[in-house]
Image (spheres, rainbow, N blue to C red):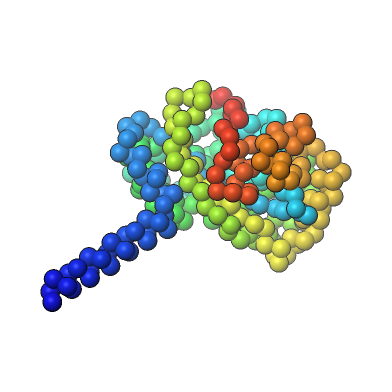
Length: 255
């Protein structure tokens, strides 16, 4: 009888562990790299906005990779209260010499590979960092200003968002750079029931159809192809319609 109870408990634990591993399978793959890597890994934690208008998706000109377009959104910022936790992971912020103020407290930097598991667990907790809504609102205001549509920013404070998917890219070699990169990306839809959302989408539609510089409306075929007419689409654009990338990232600016 005791042996049967022990077997039952063991089976339950195994099933539970398997289920948890499947629920967090993207994390498990990333954690596995801690056994293989001894060098530093570049990490980037970001939120992207999926805005679909009549079967096409909104993309903005990308500041970090000039000449390409990608979904609105960007890197989360951590709060000052996170400093102690990040110190335990030996997190080193990546500074942007060309724009050091905007990169302050970005969740983009370097950690030892052995810290990957703890870092991902902390990111998933949502503690001591921006929420997805805070990140997307801040990034929308910044990016609308960059592409010359600052008048649309009046809608942003009241916009809400709904989660679509989470992607954790296992550490990959970055061509031309001597490190691997791990990215945690959260994709959200615009909640059309939030105040001003329909007006915001309509203004974006009008601007896109008018050929407003810095903004494109692209089809799923454009995303699969990686370009819209003469414009290149960043690899992260694929996450608007799927869970994996189809191509390498375009080279980012040095420094």
